[in-house]
Image (cartoon, rainbow, N blue to C red; front, side, top):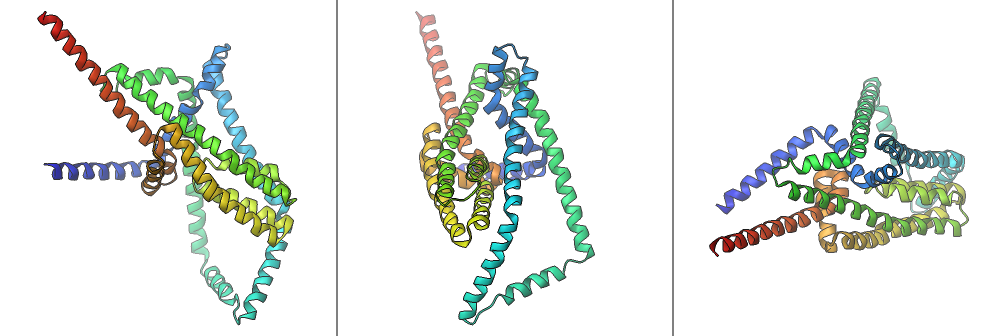
Length: 344
């Protein structure tokens, strides 16, 4: 019986995973909107307490999020464009140095050039057309997902309490228990991102201070970009690290770029992992091993979204289990007291 039960659960999870993968274009914006609603609906509540209508408050919060995101992207792009001539010059100089070093050992970079030429020669009109079509399809899917996510987020922020109460009463559980489970999930998400924010501060400041010590430009911009992109697992670290090294290469040369590469690797892979795991584990009352393991499993099965939400999901399940047990324990004790009162 236990073996068949485990097989049935595994089959159900497999079917659910495949089904969700089919609707990921709609699921991902929905999940992101729900998470943002959990985090930022208190801001709409505060605006409502000072007589700002909830619709206007939700729109203001969304405009603030858009402004922060757009500012980070603009600063990154402007910084690269500003340093691009120097970056190009330093890359060419570095390439020439590498050729000289390899020449001392009887090696060359001609193999890399030949590989690039062979790849480039295979890009005919058909492949270019395929690339254009693929890029257009990706852009259209991104635009549709962004519109759906923004639409959902607005109404989640505006009608958060109404939607929470309705959902709590329609999940097949007693209304007070269902509402408590939703509150547990909201608390876990907010605590996780609060711990993540605290962990991002020393990492961003450490990289910015290193750039300031080396006399490199755009240190404040690097701090902002590192802090903002740290909320995107893996890709955020790659993007901010590449931006930092490119600025160092363009403004300071190969030596400064290598120094900043070492600083980025140490802070983002060692310092951030240790601090983030400790802080988020404390916020969610999870052991660091459970936190790290859930992140690995989430990234394996659901990519970036799974890596981001795996730890708060595990914390929510733990809290939900405790709440359900306590709820039914109290009900059992109440039924026992009622039975004893009836006998008396």
